Length: 107
Image 1: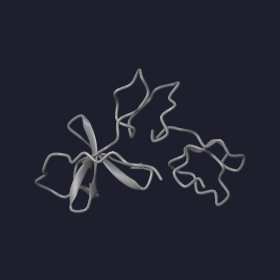
Image 2: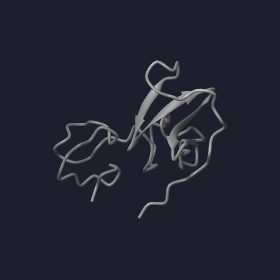
Image 3: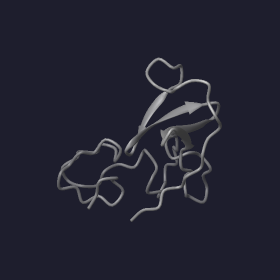
Image 4: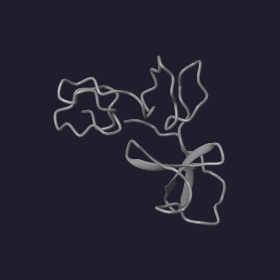
């Protein structure tokens, strides 16, 4: 079981969604919205901050991390390592028999 960081973001005066004015980025099983230098997503009636990269040389959110040597399992740019994906990112992998350790749906 993976424990997900749960940090509630500041209150918002609008609901994020299509046309709200903030960039939406798919991240694992949710959509993060880039807003005033950080990223957050809706969760149980409020917004949570996106997880922060766990690499020692990075302090970016996992949805926007661009470390070239990243080893963080929840960063959005990890590339699926299974033979069927053809180099797609783990965030987009839908292989039914995926064996990649950084894909969100891996067994």
